[in-house]
Amino acid sequence: MNQPTLYKTGIIFLITLWFCWGFSYPATKIMLRELDIWTSRTLIMGTAGALLLTLGFLGKKELKVPKECYRDLIIAALLNMTVFQICMTLGVHYFSAGRTVVVVYTMPLWAILFAWFILREPIPLSRLIALVLGLAGLAVLMSQDFSHLKDPGLGAACTVIGAISFGLGTVWMKRRTWVTDPTVVAGWQLLIGTVPLVPLWLILGTDTDWANLSLVTLGNFIFLILIANVLAYFLWFRILQIFPASVSGMGTLAVPIVGVIASSILLTETIGINELLALGLIISALIINLKTSQI
Image (cartoon, rainbow, N blue to C red; front, side, top):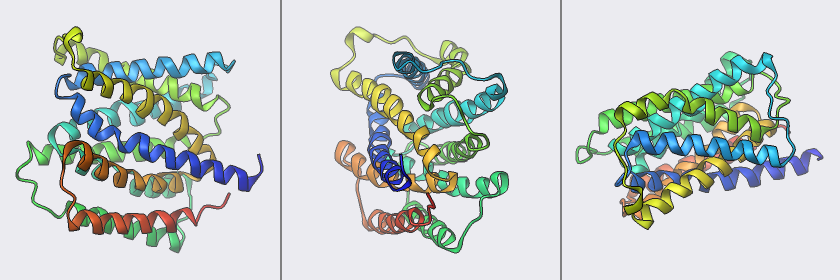
């Protein structure tokens, strides 16, 4: 695939990813009305990982990962899956879904810094401007009164930790050239990331009456497996192969836009002047940053 075609493919993947992950936040909030955090997240991650590996097997991909990649695979799985997904879910539970997605997606800002420190990726002036605009947009969105929420402090702390973990995990994946198919890598990361959650599920999870779950809850649960995880991570690890780590991270800044709008539609969360101003700043950051990509 030539470079212009590869770039266009990456953009299509990126736009699709915005909707996969953007809608996952209100979907998680809706699902948590009937399913507890530990049961839902453990089953979602484990099932999605198994499905991705099944897709790899059906596509005749090599499922075995080279031994020299074990360490990086495990570290990336803990960062990208275990820590990030649990922190994100806790954030949605204690915070509004729309605001959670915005806090989580400070991830690209951390990715830029980690890429500079670990990969020695330069930060050109245009990307620095994008970084400042993105930070300004996130600051505007967060400069509101959240006292009416369940536990905004805990929710914000969880999402910030998740953002840092996801940003570091994104860069960690770029430390080496992966010969293993991205679908297989994503599958193994989800399965490995599920392992630490199993004992927490057994201890903290509650009994679930699956037969009496509402269709809405079940539908959102399935969406989170098939779309927000299987399809999304299928796309995400291909995006990481196409773009530099910092550009990949900044490209996902559009996810909060989708997340805030989706939360407004599905959860009737209010979109005020702060949200609109923040979205404008974030869109500007996204456009500037993508133009810095050298494919």
